[in-house]
Image 1 (cartoon, rainbow, N blue to C red):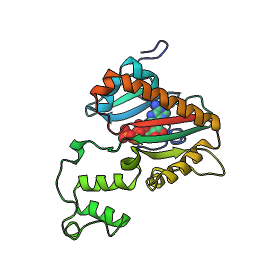
Image 2: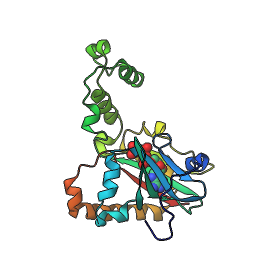
Image 3: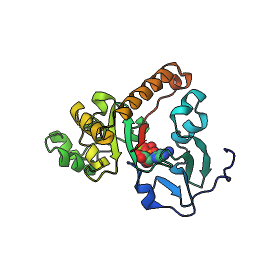
Image 4: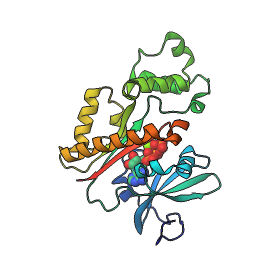
Length: 240
Ligand SMILES: Nc1ncnc2c1ncn2[C@@H]1O[C@H](COP(=O)(O)OP(=O)(O)OP(=O)(O)O)[C@@H](O)[C@H]1O
Ligand SMILES: [Mg+2]
């Protein structure tokens, strides 16, 4: 615990409107902030979450690239991570969440081979010609659906996808997760980056520099070599 901080306390009252003003994407209710102290965000995770373990074991070389971690609070069936709020103090935070990897789900999430008609319906809604005749009769597995989704986004092609962008600009809207799902090629990524950057060349340069620094550190990190990191994001923030 950092000096000057009170012992870990869960937020007594959530400030949802405030949270919604800077959270780009994510599961509903996953991120909360204390009403009287927005230096931290609290992230709700499963008790045996890999994310919790990652923060607990994070090596020194990767700490500069992650929000500061102040410990966790475990309840009976879930846990809360207390993290540095990366937009604390910003007047007009612009936030972009980029989901990394050509695969963004764990193999254990898709072991179930049950054929599902609800997933077939979702697929048909996107493209009625995608399922085979057999699939139309029997439904599709979760693995088939997830792989199809990743083929549609840039995950499989580029190894990342823009998950969402939150900006506060009267002339331009943010890019919700729902809309970001439709970005399927490099051109779409360029357009989205321009929405996020709002013509800030300095931010573009800083992003490049920081990404190169991160790559250099990852290439020599023993911890990174020994772990498979699935479903992680790189979060870009700047104050406009
Ligand atoms: N430390 C932080 N500081 C500021 N904002 C944050 C922080 N962590 C997360 N956020 C915001 O909350 C959003 C959701 O967070 P996150 O992606 O961690 O949750 P999730 O999508 O529910 O979980 P996951 O991506 O692990 O499945 C992010 O897009 C970002 O805008
Ligand atoms: Mg997320």
